[in-house]
Amino acid sequence: MEFFRKPYQSDVTQFINELKAKKPTLEAEQRAGRDLLWDKQLDRSAQAEYADARVPQSPYVYFSRPKAR
Image (cartoon, rainbow, N blue to C red; front, side):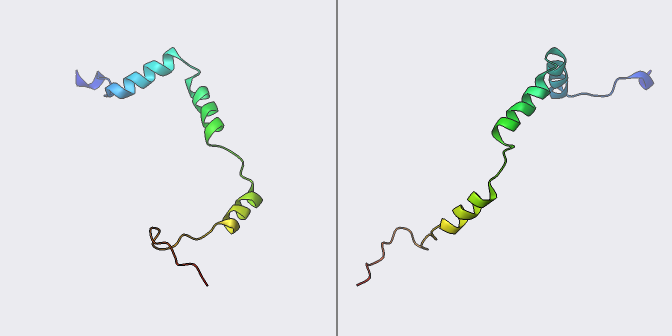
């Protein structure tokens, strides 16, 4: 009977579920990696200093301006 069929799962979903079953610490390791690379505290004062020190780029970078006399 068709009432008792399992819901469809793609191959990718099955692979991820098997991977999580084999290695239950996977999600914690992923979170630790994200913390290491992406979730960082920003120093707002340093960011403001970087923005203030930025030199605007000239509109045409391949043209050297003549020196002022």
